Image 1 (cartoon, rainbow, N blue to C red):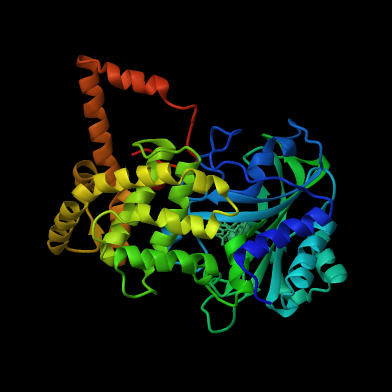
Image 2 (cartoon, rainbow, N blue to C red):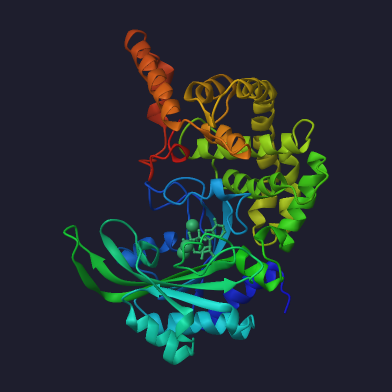
Length: 462
Ligand code: ATP
Ligand code: MG
Ligand code: MG
Ligand code: MG
């Protein structure tokens, strides 16, 4: 049966409330309890300390629809946007959690009941993966749920063994996939073609079972826990009978609005999907208090805005357009997230200023890039050029990489980093002789953000 995205979100929370779960509101995109995490990227983040036993709550079952951003750090899907049917920079993760209460059996049964009875998905289109040694999960799926053996795939990689870090709680997971049909490229999980979009992962059930010590040994946890996450947009696509997340109600609304403000003609244009994706992460990041800047979270935001502006420009936008999509976003998501409407004016202002500022150098930078490309042999854009575009025209390296990819080219990331290093040294050198008190003040005022999960350029401060 057809269900809107809003209806599915509600049906999920209602179902788990009925199973004695406390409905907990989404927490901010800026994790309050973890200075090493760039953005909230999963439903479990706000419960991390509860899982660790460092915090207790008046309930031991919870459910939420958590806003997530995966655009930097360990989970970075920025480069996937526009290329896969299933990845966004911003998405909502539906989850149910057990803090030392139920374990594998109920976790699997709840998920199965929700999918096949509440949503009435055809059983034969679903298949699951388990961690290769997890016979307990196999037996529940096979003997209790009745899943045929050939649709339970044993996976022996870290994909099916979840851990929060090198030490701490960890355990096997079981993931549920939906088969969108033979006409779409991609193989079953565990095959070389699994990265295609035929079998789409919809729900990850994590069974927190062990505590891993520094020496690698794993000790069973006194209280076993459950953490699950299902992508709302992915399950909406299934319920609305479409393959790509970008075809669901919510995204169709955003894509139409994006086409209007950019003068785009072709509603299938990949750039429209990118713009529709990016307005969600950018608006929600601003709404949660992130401001465009040259470092940390603010730089991730700046990079996403600039990418959106570049794609809008490619579609034919005349002047600032991105901020105009905030209204369309509120139309789609304002009911679930009333804070968006409350902050409409400020979100629009922040986006417009950033956009206008970048708009001044974008055309010139693109022209330089275009000219230079004509003279390049091979398919790698030299690091010096990437650096010049960054330094003079405000092109984040990933934006240049995005342009490159459209021409089946890549950027010389190492060369770019070397240029950055030279610049950093020069700046340091200059600092030694003429102390810049403003800089010093600025660094004293920086937030408590302590680190990054990855050294990949898209997660680093550049
Ligand atoms: P994938 O393998 O497709 O990248 P994942 O294994 O990285 O997904 P998990 O970390 O297991 O995803 O997150 C739980 C669920 O959240 C996924 O099963 C999926 O439904 C959803 N999800 C994850 N990343 C995204 C994303 N970038 N955009 C939309 N939904 C996502
Ligand atoms: Mg992923
Ligand atoms: Mg996966
Ligand atoms: Mg997964």
